[in-house]
Length: 287
Image (cartoon, rainbow, N blue to C red):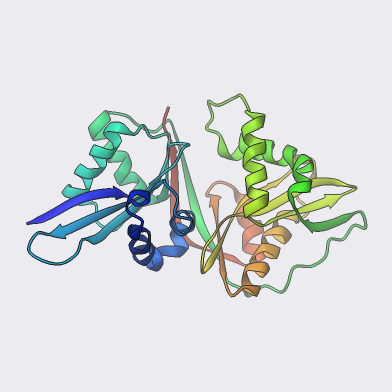
């Protein structure tokens, strides 16, 4: 008889190594989840199966559920046992958002619908794109009053307009209208301390930025790409993501990013920078 169960890795630290080994084959598609495993975060859970007759438990899946109630999972087989475990988890955990490969997210949506009779209030379909390294090194900006800089915590105040506008346009669901400036500043400061942030400085004003939002043993994941509206169409995003990809390459790492399917401008920029579509992703929000 096979027993199925899940454990919070923080309570059983040896599970972090098991989770990393399981996810290593899928690292490209789950960089943020892998980073949480490597950092031994409390949000990581491991699904296990154990044959009662012999052997140690085997990893059947990994998922995370963070303070923002965002759910991400790498599960290869959504069988009846795993569906039951997830229903058990959702019984005591209210989900705000789900992100992952499209088919997996749709299966979790179905579980929530069957169990709680809830449907997503907003759906965002995306492509995962990977840098192919075939584009020449990023060129310098053309205007004399423009330069690309790598940002530090000292640049936080100048970056705040980009941070807030990005969150309002690209992160928040449509019904969220109020901005928590303290939370946005905390998030920005954390990013500046832990991640890589490049920005375009024009006349001592930061008008465009791109950053990593996850770094693992083999990958950089780019996020937070945003240009103030009056400065769009100048190729800033293309140059910034290319610079991050080049930084990753200098560390013998690859680079991926997400982009909404309907964002034709961003798709053109990332393709021009040397990125190719490699998978379909989906993010859904619940009210």
